[in-house]
Length: 114
Length: 112
Image 1 (tube, rainbow over the protein chains, first blue to last red):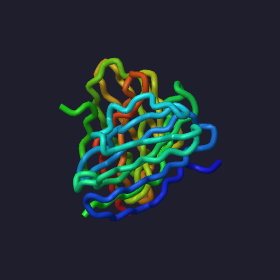
Image 2 (image 1 turned 120 degrees about the horizontal axis):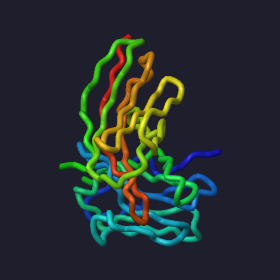
Image 3 (image 1 turned 90 degrees about the vertical axis):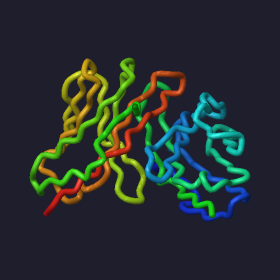
């Protein structure tokens, strides 16, 4: 079974530009989560999809961040316009059903905003 | 106060020793607890989950949970240099999303 995949692995953009991160969850996993780790801090929750619906987006920093999961498969996270403080590693995780609890993480996308 | 607290380390142990990693959490209603291992530049890898008070063993790993003390630990027996990594404690928030709340991680170094 293939794991969670993310693309790109690393992105370097200038302040004010737009970046789109992609996550492909494990096949059959309806739950998809986005997390972020900024330098020196712990991993923090951004949002949660159940299939194509946003279940919880309480962790999204502001309206410069837009997440979508059309068709309930892969998800994208767009940052527009990017700011310096958006730099960090963005992780995607998926889990099979709501009550299974166990989330499996992708390798992350390292975003650097200069 | 952070919701999930871990000593950042590094915790240094000799090869073959028992490594003991500790974590405390603040939300009394939490029911699910996880240990992830993260090698530098890699994804967090789920290694243990525990839901009930007591011990849970899986190979060289033992997770221990004490809900009354709001304390969860991970023991690694017969530590190997390949166990050197950052160990992340995560607690599931009991709300609609079952999001994970992470500690900052403990760096473990196993000396050959």
